[in-house]
Length: 329
Image (cartoon, rainbow, N blue to C red; front, side, top):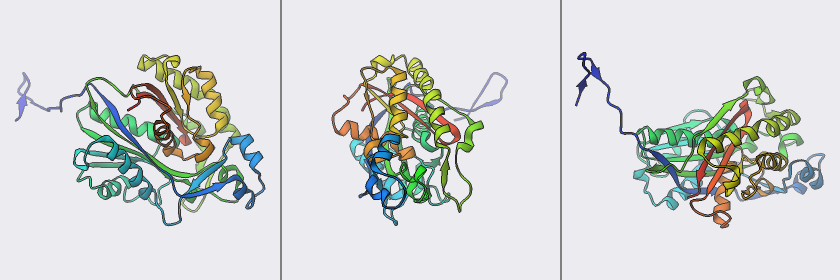
């Protein structure tokens, strides 16, 4: 039914806003193949001690040659959907965060939705590299609060192995494959805090893929310096905006870029009561998948309680970053 304002001009009607959103469940998936540091030492000039000392990684999971980003997203998304108690018909938006898709067309989100039996949802891929899951979670939260979606499936899925030169020890020792997902729904009380996000485009060249025929390269020392100095203030700002002090956090789940970076940010944040995610040790750096993958495993192990506050923060190529406080489902 149309309406007009006092001047007789037709008014647009907006959907009814929702006070907040919350996460109902997480899901995770890792490929079966395990690649250890000793395996890599047989292919390049490195060693288990060298890798552990510099990045803290012991092993990582690598997808099979015929296993795609969408395949992994379906596994993680299906697990999150099953844990949420919702049916595929309840989901009306699917967002897949990835920077390692095999192709750009069609979107992974539409394919994932179809394979999960989700009929005619809004569907799009999002590329904010390693910050992608936090960006996608913020997009889902905003869509729900604006009344443009009821329930959203958010997935971070990466097959970084297909963009890595396996003779380059600066990247091959770090990156890995996997997927993590969350189902987000409307809530009368907020379970996802305000996002604090941004980018440092003047340093975008620090992590790059030159063209479709090239591999990923990064300037490791420059990225390390940026992450260990610029990211802790973003984490603190996300806590302030959510009205939560770092000491009240039950969990701190930063992007699993490098164990030394994770430890440095955690020290600066002074989240003294929080369990700090260290999934990097066994999973490697899975880019946009790393945060939901790490948190799903923490929940499965009983390391964090339902309803407790956790701080998520992603950062990576772009250089992009995003952070928000959530309540553990």
